[in-house]
Image (cartoon, rainbow, N blue to C red; front, side, top):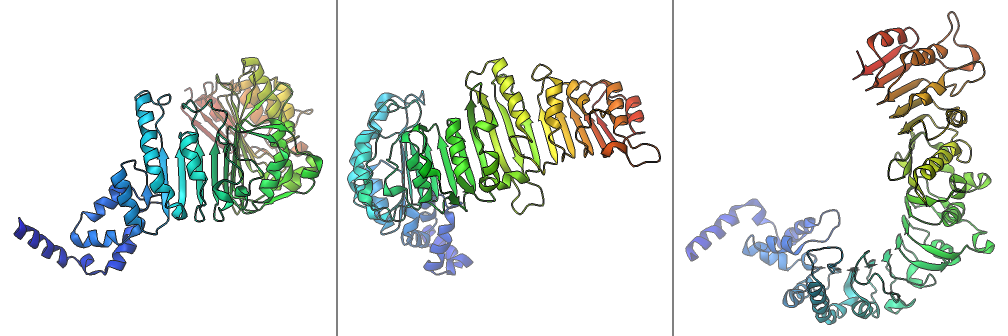
Length: 511
């Protein structure tokens, strides 16, 4: 066996990579990280087992051993020793018996007991912490961590998951001067069911802030937090409740967040969202996403800034190019999804919002969706809207006259698509002497809807140019019609449509 090992070692020495110095190997080993994620211990051990030379180089690369997520005390101490002075990435997720049926309460208690045995070793390296993630761990084991300064800490996550054993505790509070106030490098803070007072210096200079399922008291201090984070790039507020709105003096000056590119809101009170959007001057690449519950009296006016403030705080939304509006299904959600034009400097979604009635009966959900749709172009200015796709609009959801009135406020529209919508709403686009809806419409598509061929012919003819003229009444002629899986659009109907529209497409329709 000894002879075989010697021959194997000599063969390894012939490999080109074997001639690299240890310093270069250490640099290569650092690429074991994927997208900045921590290096799993299995990867580090795998690199160290390739050969004696690689093991030597791996042991001289502290970064390979700096991910700490084990409760095995001898292994933990070995990792801390090999990590030397490297920044530590600490991740501990206690399994929950409520969330995972395969986990027993005894197993969760054992996990916490083992974790307590490791606290001393971990706290002794507090000056090296760079990432600290503690999930589903109770106050008695978390508090020792937050009582020590962590001058190198850049990312802090404290979470209690829904339905975990600690969900009902009322004392999940963090003192404002936790970590003895010494977190000068903290840039990412994520708290779920842990309350850190908004006047804590820990909030200053953050780039990522996520608060979830916390009662924060008055809203005014949140405005001060946001002003203290001018480089904020991501803001998540989920199931946050406030006891009172901000005072007028607290909203007098705008909150400038030029780098904010992600704003995620989930189940905030409508007045909270309106206060935020009315005070923040947002960055060009921002995407606003999330979910919002509204009452019978609410619509987009309840969450958007007033028209005079709109251009100052949300000017980029004025340049929305495309909107996809989905009417509610059985779950009661309707969706508003908006995109920038393809020529914009930062292409991508601007809005991705789901709305639901607080009492989501069928009637309440359809009335809410109808109100939101009728807000487009009125309470929600859309001067540059070119494309609109409407999904799942059934005949009982809103009167045809209300639908036509809503489209009447979208005069810039050039393309419209009906996906699984009732045919009555398609007929609203027929031009008459008293109705010239969407005068700039050039393209129309219908997907998955039964249509009356005669109605579609009437629509196409009403928008066709008159013989010898460009078009009367200031209506642009239709250039393209497409139908996918639409009963009633036969070959004969398609042939007649081609007399009025240059391009007519038809797929999976009746013969």
